[in-house]
Image (cartoon, rainbow, N blue to C red; front, side, top):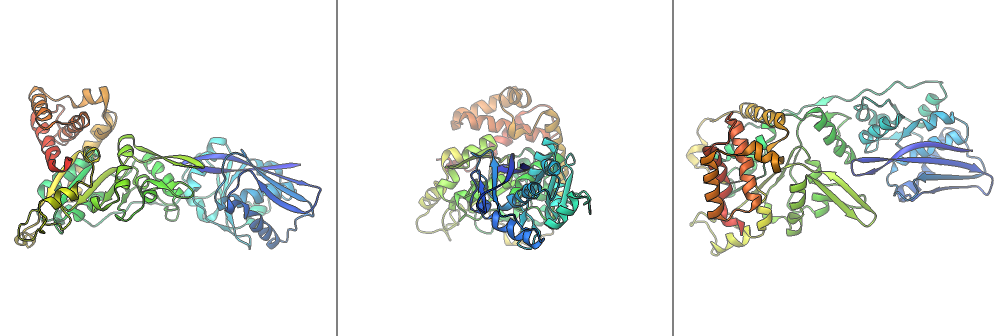
Amino acid sequence: MVARAYTVAFEGVTARQVEVQCAVTPGLPAFSIVGLPDKAVSEARDRVRAALSALAIALPSKRITINLSPADLPKEGSHFDLPIALALLAALEIIPADAAEGTTALGELSLDGSLVAVVGALPAAMSAAEEGRLLLCPHASGAEAAWVGAAQVIAARGLADVVRHFTGQAPLSPAEPGEIVSETGSRCLRDVKGQERAKRALEIAAAGRHHLMMVGTPGSGKSMLAARIPGILPPLTAPEALETSMIHSLAGLLDAGGINRTRPFREPHHTASMAAIVGGGRRAGPGEISLAHNGVLFMDEFPEFPRTVLETLRQPIETGEVMVARANAHVKYPCRFMLVAAANPCKCGYLSDPGRACSRAPVCGEDYMGRISGPLMDRFDLRVEVPPVAFSDLDLPPSGDTSATVGGRVAAARAVQIARGGLNADLEGSALDRAAAPDDQGRALLTRVAERFHLSARGYHRVLRVARTIADLDHSDTVRQPHVAEAVSYRLALAHADG
């Protein structure tokens, strides 16, 4: 008799169904696992054997074969322990075979039979719901998986609980979803003294999810401004929260199974590798750009990142997804994020201050900003200089709008865009022509600027998108000349860096 249970193998955020087949046949005693398992899956036989021994279940002196089907799909991770144990228990007629066949299971077994939390419970629950099966997982992963309301989720603390549940001795109650987490940051835009133009650029960028580049001397407030972006962004919608949480589930970043409604804010260090930023590694896991999906990716000291890392951002910025290609896997992750970059104007940081600049000025500035290629710089919708703040301004009381006030304007502008069909950063083709067509004066201004400063077609369209966002913040149905003029002013800032 061949007993069956089911589990999943992860390909990006997609959970592919895997059938776990178990056959106990006459022959020399052996326990083998086939079907392209990795080292962690191959070691499952020892963990399963010890866990069953802890329950006083002795394996028969026969040949036990576990097949993971489809056999050509790579199987990675310790979450195969529980489905292998489940299929084996069914083959030994300890639990009903039909109960095992109606279950999608994942979980790592300890040697004493307890279950350890694993990553990916949320996408696994979605896969189980699509197949109409029960999801069985460790107790620590139950709150996360239970967010998929269409799936029945049973969370067990150990293999003994699983046996008692399926034999009817002590049925387990369905798991309850974790709490909704809404992080309310205490960082307010009013804390930033001066920098009114940079604050305005921040608001425009947040309203339309435009990419922003800030350049200024050390200590001028670039990082301080970026840290306040989460406070002006609207919370994630329910579909966005689920999509973002699936990525974070694969990375093991969900805290106690709670779904976070706050938009991600990722700030990798400039020493991060390409695999850390884009995704990859042995299991082709998600990188920072995917962990920032539906949120913000803040890259401080932007020119200090390796050139190869920076250039890999170009395609994900345009498409909103990244393909991580490895010898044994091609995995696609979503990565629709708002890129905020900060940089000093040169290596020493004081290019604009003759009294403090190094002896290589202004050549050092050209060399330093030249690390950012023209095609990458062309993808920044807004560019703003952040000048140093005068000491006298630091003693002034807080001024300007609070993060809550700015956040209200951003949310209202985004609501208008969503009603129109999507955020302005995603407008293209005929949708861009309909939504962002400027009036005659605005079109004439944009034409003159495009000819005078040799804007690329990408740059031309990005100016239109930013102008549309400015018009939305202005509650204007039409993109007028002042909106185009302001968008152009941000586009032409730092023009020397375009190379």
